[in-house]
Length: 289
Length: 237
Image (tube, rainbow over all chains, first blue to last red; front, side):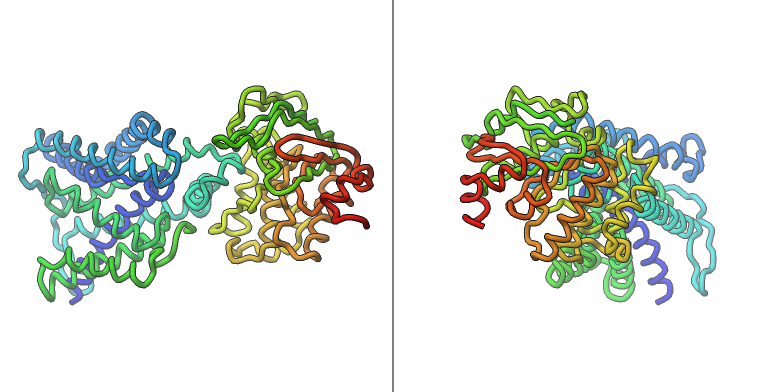
C-alpha cells in the first residue's frame, strides 16, 4: 500500500508539472497544443543523448534543455502560431485552428524523432540507488524527480501569484479582452506564457526520462494525460493542476497495484468523466490561481 | 487636452459612428448623452483603441498623437478607460486588480501614493482587498473598475455608463466620487444614460444620435434645452 501511494505521488507530481505547462499554453496563450507531449519526449531524448553521449548529468542537462525549449517554444509561437492568432476572429476559432496546426506539428516532431531514434524504447540508468522511505524501497531518481517537480511547481506558483508579471499572466487567462486596458501587451505575454509552458514540459521530460522508459511515439500519452489534468483542475488553474495531477497519479498507481496495470487509462478517463459530470468547469473552476 | 476628430466606426454594414469629434480640457468633466445604440460606447472604445476605425481618425492627448496606437500603449500614454460592463478581473482579488491598474510605467513611481488615494476615495475597497472581485456587488465592482483605472495615473479618465445597474443611492455616491476625481485636475469623459444625475456634476456635454454628434453645450445649457429635456430628462422637470 505505502509503495503504491509513494509511486502514485511521484507520478502525480510529474503529471501536475506537465499539466501546469499545458495550462499556461492553453489557458493563457489560448493554444491547444497537441504536440505538447512531443516536446516532453524531445527533451527526454535530449537528456538521454547528453547523458549517454557526453556523460552530462541530467540535472545539469536541465540547465541546457529548459532554456532551449523556452526559446524554441517562443519562436514557434511567434513564427508559426501568431498568424493563426491574428486571423482568428473568436477564441473558439483559434482553438480549432491551433488544434489542427499542432496536430500536424505533432507528426513532424514525431517523424523527426522516429528517424533519429527509431521506434525502440529508451532508458538510462541515473541515480538508480535504492533508498528507504517510510519503510519502502524507492529509487533515488524518482525521489529527486519528485523533489524537483515540487520545487518547480512552487516557484511557478509564487511567480504567478506574487509578482506583477505573474498576476498579468493570470489576468490574461481570466479576461484577455480587458487586459489591454491595464497596459498589458496580450500577444507578447501570450508568447511568453507559451514559451514558459514549453520550458515546463521540457523540465518534466528530463525528470521523467530519469526513471521511465520512453519511445519516439509515447508523447501522445502525456499530451492526453496533461489535457485530462488541466480540464479536471479547471483551465488556467495551477492549484487545480496540482490536485488533479496527484489524483490521477495516485489512482493510476493504486489501480495498477491492486487491480490490473492494463486498467490505468480506463481509470484516467473514468475519473475525468466523473469530475466533468459533477463539476464541468473543473475541480476549482476557471482561472484564478 | 484631449482632441478627437474624424472617428468613423462600422460593424459590417452598420455605421456606428460618422465623423465624430469632441474635446475635453484639463480638469473638465464632459458627459456624452444619447439613446441606446447611438454610438456612445463605440466612441469611447475608438478613443481607447479598442475598435477598428475607418480612415480620418485623429486622437491627441496634450498634443501627443494616439491615433494609431494599440490599446495597451494608449493607457501608457495617460488615457484610461472604464468599459461598459466594468472589465474587472473577476477571478483576481481587489488588491490584484489595483496592482494591474498600476502596470503602465507612468504609474509605477507613485503606485503607493495612488493606491492610498483610491482607497480614500472608495474606503470599501480597503476593507475588501483580499476579496475575489467576482463575489462583490455591482457597485463595488464599479469601484474596483474606476479604482483600477485611477491606479494608472491617467490624465484623462473615460467612463462608459458607470451607473448602469446601480441603485439610485449608489449612483449618487458614485457620481460624488467622480466629481471629486475631477477636482484633482484630471479630465473625465463619461458616457451616461442617466442624463439628469450626470449633467448635475458635468461641466459640458455632447449629444449623440444615430452615430453623429448632433449637439453640444454647457451642462446648464443642455439641462434647459428643450429637445434634450424631452429626449433624456423625461420631459418637464
